[in-house]
Image (cartoon, rainbow, N blue to C red; front, side, top):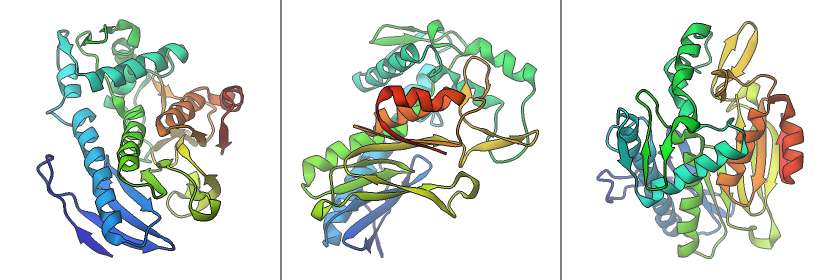
Amino acid sequence: MHRVGDSSELSEPIPVAIERAEDCQVGRFEAMASPCSVLVNTEDASEADRLTRVAAREALRIEHSFSRYRSDNIVHRINHSDGSRVAVDEETAKLLDYAATCYEISDGLFDISSGVLRRVWRFDGGTLVPSRRAVSELLEFVGWEKVDYDGTGIRLPAGMQIDFGGIGKEYAVDRAAALLAEKTERPFLVNFGGDLYASGERPGGRPWGIGIDDPSRTGEAVLYRVELRSGGLATSGDARRFVRYRGRRLGHILDPRTGWPVEGAPQAVTVIASTCLEAGTLSTLAYLQGRGAKEFLQAQGVHFQLT
């Protein structure tokens, strides 16, 4: 394995590790608080390095642009606008349009304004749970229907926030894959923290074998394997972010109507779709259905796996 750095418009070198794995070169880097990788069917390490850095630059660009944890981007300006209108650029409008559509088709279950609930929830595997009163007080600041958005600008009532965390990583996967497809005809797989996109089958018509974490032994065991030939794959669940409450394991996906974790949901929902963003949206929407996750996905006609 060797490490290289890339100087870009992001002002900091991007550390990338390249290693060989069977008939692929694998490029690894960190972004969006996740381990990220690009697998390319090539024997040329320099080619894999070049392609990985393309993906890394795009992942970091999107993280810088849309992370709610930064103080120098459009999300921060919107979240600290104190009721004033904020003009948005074309890419931000695209994400807001998508989020608004998700809110509509989910009858309010998929709501990017629910991120404000993270003020009281800490999904760190512990047992600290907020009081019902603390959660209830924050619900005043949840509800996309309270937002004034017209496609070019957005106005949030004072105290409200938006959070692209439910779609940002999947969007980054698709954007990185689109850039790689412009630069190589070789089969490749983009993996940003378990959200994936495969450009097509490997040589000989072989699929990409994807291991899905056992939620009870995250990072230690694979519960099952999925074959991905092309398109996106995403998993929603409580494998890495959860809290223990009264003998139960509560996942980090919150019902915006109650402010509490979804009841009766599977531990993990894995979906394969044409894009990673579509797969991630469907897996989250299914999880939000709780006990109705299987019926919801059957109605969508997509390949899925529940745990």
